[in-house]
Length: 103
Length: 271
Image (cartoon, rainbow over all chains, first blue to last red):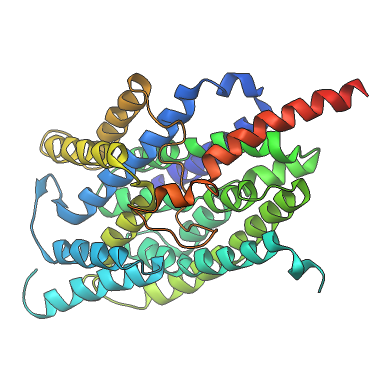
């Protein structure tokens, strides 16, 4: 139940961000730093989420099959595979490595 | 079908299919992260912003709190406010269209619209991509959620590896040039350093603060990081084709259009 509350707040705030652009006079958002921060934060958050999902386990670090998924995803991206193929490459590699005994 | 002769509509439809399809991976990962079917659907129907949705379930999957999940999703949603500002200046929606258009304001609809030069095409591109992605994303989220809940042990299927690859794929198109790569590297290091000292989920927020400080105090491209997950206008080399892609890039084009349209508007008001 607790998760529902945070989920609904996240939905409301996501819509609020979107509305802000349409209703706040453009001059408030024209400061180039505003869009710089939005952009650098997007990069930073996605990089952080990648790392957390690849090597973090609880409050420690772990080298497991997820590292293989990271490498497979990167290789798929270098070859310009579409998003879904990248995801499948990641899943397949992690599953294969686990089947081979590397957790 | 006259509408299909419009290049913006055709681009909008193809981006809708490409983006909608990866809703399958979101749906499957969401239920294996511990969300139930309706929580998963609520994120796609109401939050509707791929990066933020993946962030929310990514934090939950790592054992983070609801507060941390909400914070990561919300910080990642800031760029939609910038897109809203660009689209408001570009399309000048009125009445209910503002409220509906706001919900459809995401990377893909913005990129499809700002990649066009004719105002009518910009409008068609936005609505086609916005509505198309919304419908297909939700449909495929449901498919993924239903399939994911029947999978049993998600690790056996490598679904945690799927999440890693998904975040890397969301990050990848934004790594054009040295600066974004440096920002990504610094934030990755900040995350790893923070892990032992703060609760799960919080290292992601630490990285967000580091990235915000970099953006605030450094000077660089104004539209850094504001690239769509799926580039609607043709293929480009992710790391090498930047110059080639620049003419069609949503950022610079969008800003150029904003200024031009504002000038046009003053004239209209005068006449």
